[in-house]
Length: 558
Image (cartoon, rainbow, N blue to C red):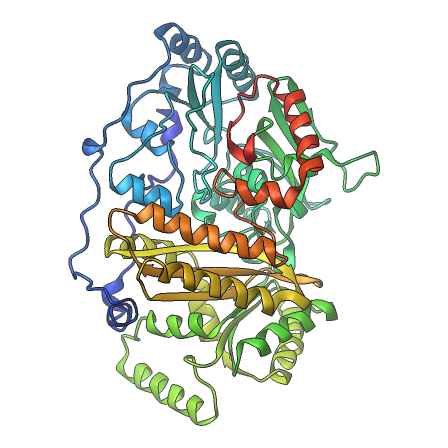
């Protein structure tokens, strides 16, 4: 079908079906996991699940309704095939991967539609509202909070997934005003390719960049790796167009406005509950001359955190600044790929010994990645000033090779997660944000809650954290946690950890999500964070734009 032109991705895990993570090239990693978690890793990888083994319920929509929908998009862009329905049934959270590997797909859409125009979307929503069909917008499907799963709710005849991948046109590029307008189904790599042809750059690169797109970024308020310098997606969006069951909302394409509350801000983070985003204008920049990424090593995590605060409050801001705690720094060394050049590898090991003599260690310290993008002369001056801040707080510069090694491999680690799940490792992430005065307290409290929750299932743990998106008033905290899977109770174990961590976040001054979104997995804490009066107002807006409640029901708690 026309809608299949993107990279083929795994339905049971992350990313390109032809790519994996070469663990065999990292000899220290498996022994480290076995020792820390008390597991035995089989050297033979778990076979990929077979689609043939998945039992899927039959589509619930009548032939008449399916013919009606098929006529809107054309037969080539309407599917009830098993593969398409499974691909659009779940996202990429730990819960999703566990269910997919066991062949449990409880809520598949009854059909998948690939519209090619806004008019087709309007017609789809009209049929869905008339026939009582739930509609789930779908861009790349990379949600890790249950944002794309069609929940089986009472009162609906069925559900459809509306995949925007055909709607990927470049509508306008304005180099004079530094803005560009795209259809919402365009994916990250295509955006940057199109802008690069014109000497421009967006600079929004979340970990899902290769498999996600503009509409999904806006709907979930995503953050890219360079958000410290460039801002999150909502700061890049100048205007947005959305089709709702009650008509089209098109915000004015101007740099700023005081004409009442900003509806653009309401669309950002709406997670498909109000309508389907079809177009957006984004603020772009001149393509950087250089991408300069450096590694640094702090003696302690607190010194790195202090450096980031000073950077952000000095106004001398890097595009990327990432500070890993001791556990994550040590893990990075364990998962490192040794150099194929024996001389280089010997030199690196000698350097690590020298660092130790100077009081620096990846096993006791804090590794940092500092990245600046822009004109060569300007970047050079910024790097010097930012490195000076880090030095004052106990950092030792490691040079470009350490920074560029991280930069080149920045999209690879989700593949390792899927491999570890096959080894019997429970591994997932969660993130939050808070103010500088609360950052270390929240870090310690949440980390402790995760460790205790994993121990409740008779497992040792590895819990790491880093700061990767920072502001003058505070920063994000991004946790990665691992433990031994509770066989047969994997989802129960994961839910227990999520609850303990989520409760700790809300109780201690954090947000339940800095950039992953809400979906349905974060709803209990979203309701606490938002408050009853704000929720009432949001529900009233939902009822106004989507009175029959067909838009992505169950997400954001609606």
